[in-house]
Length: 71
Length: 545
Image (cartoon, rainbow over all chains, first blue to last red; front, side):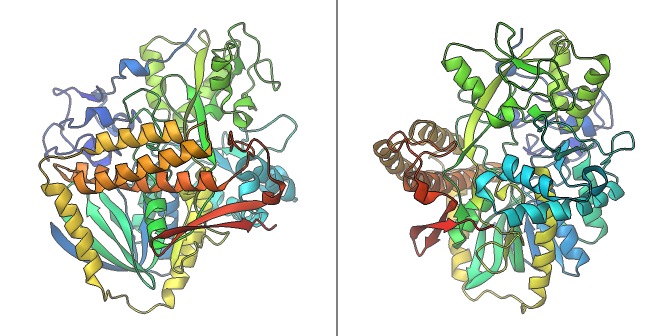
């Protein structure tokens, strides 16, 4: 379940923790790699990815029930 | 729980487009302003990561006559539920807001010109201005801070305080054990829509929603409990979009909606057209569900044969409509819109109705203002009436003396209720109550509506509510926030049941199996709903103008 943080790339700036509208990072500690406490509450709005200063440090994994149906 | 009292002239509840615009304007008029947001104003609300359509009258584009635009917006967006005076004020003030936003760094022009496209029927006036809204929230937040608005993030305001008039509100920190009592001369509500009322696209999941699932009708519920009028709560609203990635923004797609044999399902176009998209889903949002149920589905958004320029155009606007998450998913799965038609679906129901507010953003209670999706209107409506709400709330505050609370008892009672939820070791989680509410709404006040079913549903919902109030538990402040959201949704659910039962007719999208006719006696009337004492009262009111 999303989001997924690459611990090696994350600089623990806390921006994603600060902005997440659903607060999936609830309980994260300052200057530590964020923990994803409520993954099932992610809306996949992508705010954390858009505002992350370290490209590639955070990404969304879209869960299978949301796979888009197409021809 | 730690307690604190915050005094201000104007309290803005909710930091979406409406709340931030209200806060900015109220500060400009000279009021002290505090804004409380349940999340963080940088990315909260329905426009958190963007929006690309702004209903507006632009004299340079439309010419000197505003009336055709007023008429079109009235017809397409507000319908018979809003007065022409309201829509006229909206359009009159819209250009002023467009210029403000452009000046603040939200690009309202595309390649140096006013660009209108989408949500328009061929031959009708264009009303939806395209704008690059991906970063509108950080920009509005910056403008609010620049003017000295005090923003308190992660603060869920859940009840208004009233002693005669509105004297403030009470809120709970969603991360720390902290309760704030706000004393304010005016309050502006801008908490958004009610998203988690009906079951979501994916069974058992609550967060796969077209609109942000953290907008849970908090404003409507607290306004109702304080005695403010709600309106049109019985009118359902549905969105449509890609299946199964629930997301708004269908007006941004440049394609044709087609059946499995590639026949267009609407009469508006046969080839992808960047000006119009396919507006059939604007006037017929349950199309996808109806096609599927009647053996003709599924229906696809078909962007094949789109020109390379139009494809770039669509992708650019998708990213500004807040759909970068969706675009990332398409890319990762190798779904190419130039080759793969994407199935569309009709999403779940919610209510179109909300807090009654007039063209001055005044609710029925003195000192209480509302804007934005407190009563559906979209981004431009939120921006314009947020601005007007802030202006009037600040003027109102000037004539009010300093607020004090005489009856601290009511605050103590609310605090004790929160403590009970936090201290309970066994009981109901917010999830189970929310799911129970979802199934009750869908089964008893869904697309099939008639009296005996509604009566049974009302009974069940009232039992759920009573049970929840005595059993909800939360192991931290985040869960406490969800518990309060669910209690708000239960109140709104109850109002919806009562309002549906009151409208004994079928009109537009409001269908009753036991009253399959339109009652001409209700033409031009709206249904008002409010609490008097502990009893709900209803009133049919003429929509003038």
